[in-house]
Amino acid sequence: MTHDVTLYMSNESAPSLTARLMLEHKRIDHTCKHLMVGPHAFAMPPRGFEMMTVPAMRISGRPVQGSRVISRALDEIQFQPPLFPADPQRRQGGRRGRTARRGAAGRRAAHRALRRPA
Image 1 (spheres, rainbow, N blue to C red):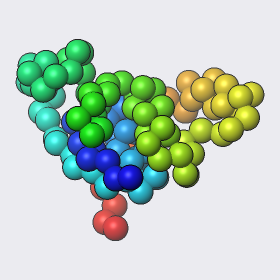
Image 2: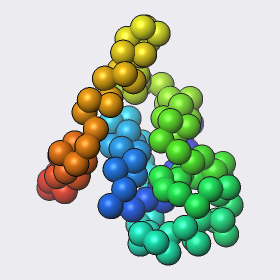
Image 3: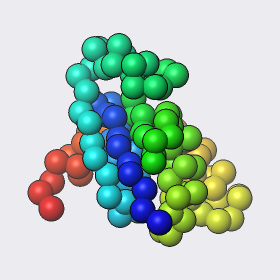
Image 4: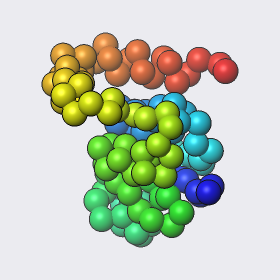
């Protein structure tokens, strides 16, 4: 079953870039709506989203917002390839290790990866 997926994002937002990378990893066809930082907050409620933040996604009409919620929703609609290990302990380990990789250097690396020509 195919799903109509639209990602509302800002290129300056690391979570938005993460959501885009999740879609690309799963090879899910999607549309990106790039929003300006600042005014994006006022654009979200009229689009049916509860929060004023990005990333936000509409999956077959259903609003989904926040990186973790988006990752779960993507695994629901298309399990393969999975975003997280099946083993609960390995899944927890990935979440703990994430804090060490955060920071400006990690965001710059993700941003560079998205800007590379295909």
